[in-house]
Length: 457
Picture 1 (cartoon, rainbow, N blue to C red):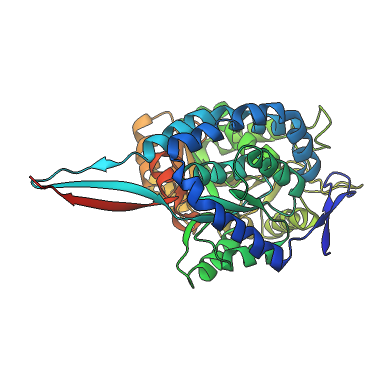
Picture 2 (picture 1 turned 90 degrees about the vertical axis):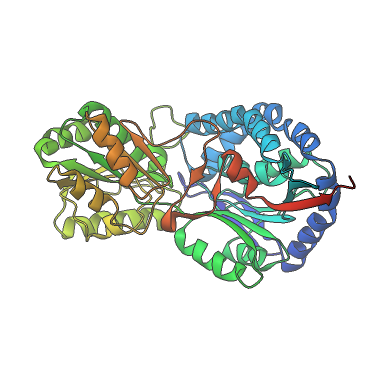
């Protein structure tokens, strides 16, 4: 049996040898999901959601175990890992209520006819999720996929196979056999799942992988939801609350060691306040100590792999070589693990790799602009991505104007991006295809079906 090594990114030690799902076993998993789907759909949305409500106590009971696994496999501070588990568990009840609402039939009466629109699940959803939020990202796709009547074949990232397996085990303990199948492996297994006999792909990961998935899925016109990362801008005008803006810039650039799809990756600062803002950012970034996620003093863990660490280091080195000023960090520490320090760059230009490419690492990248809002909008929109953005200004009207002009799925004004419960999570432009969350997001796991009855009288 083929296996691969599950590596602790903080120590370089092998956690486990993970058996890779063979082609035959993948096909069997898909067949079991196919066989289970009609009966699961026939239960109805209320019964399915009642079953899945058991996720809340099950996740809460397993929270400590899941947090340990996530920290061990991908490195994030354990406190954050525990918060991830508990946070997603806390939102499931509300989400299931939204799904019940999303699945309600809609009536369109006309003279002599009764017409109803119902929602029909696609069938089997192939679910492929990343390593950076190894509990939250699977639940974000699996919960609506299953609740709307689909079955699922789930492949977690090869970086977090044990965390993914535990999430799958919890779901499997609640649902009938075949409703949630687990497969393990690297990119070749994911590619085989996409090409397999499934009806939809739900994927969160890189833009490049998303493009390959879209190309493969096009051959059989599979439905898609792709969340593909970003290069999120933040604009700071001269009248902004600089302390609040600096907290956001540092916290949302360095959180999870910058390994967040909606991290702040580009900060545009009005020239009039640039020096003051840089000093604030340097002071705050200096408080972010990198270390093993099980150590209480660590605000950041390691990067997930040597390749990811090297990519970040290359972006920083290229920026400095091209004229950026290195204000903090930028040097890899000696010793084991994929650690990279909190880093601050200033005078970053639009043509540098660190501005053009997704870095996915603990870097605060600062660029000055004149203070003109049209210039800020042009700089912020100068990217193929469009996941999120943030605007800080003491002029609320200007903040709203800029927010409405930014090509992003979600924008925060005088705060980090985000929305109220029930709002969709949207990747605009090349940051996504389809979206998750909210009534309309849940409905993407279904197709509308119109049934019309001619009345006898």
